[in-house]
Length: 226
Image 1: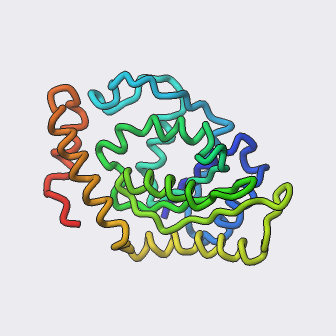
Image 2: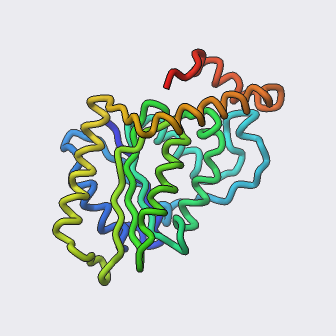
């Protein structure tokens, strides 16, 4: 079982988000193969809207995005971790999200599972986790849940013992869902509707977006039954 953890804090694993992520990772099963990617140490530039990835399947920007994409495609599950910056994810994670147009149009992470980690200075944690969940579902994956919390100091949290126990349970749940191929009915409505929307979009642009159209013909031959 391979799991990719992407942390989008500019402080990497040394910050508050990294501290909470540590506990989630501690809950992973020992046999899980973990790849930890710190966006603060990588180079992911903003999307330029060139449409090249839709036509060829590859982003032409020379940075670390394509290797990250390759890791996600090879994984069974993934973890996204971000601080709450002005009611949303960090700029580092948003830049990565914006580059995932090809992944989202083709729902390339279908049959995979995601878990979410978020920290804030003063709250609104659920709103940011909901946004991250929508991203996970829009890639075709299912979310096993998320954990978010305001901080109470540098790498310190309110009700920390209970929070860390919940974080370790999230890591454990991610592994269990991968093994059991868990299905989340509460996410099926959005995922099914979004898949139909992307199928129609790619079919409409099939002459311009040849790589994505070919992907759909090979990977999504049958209508979604969700």
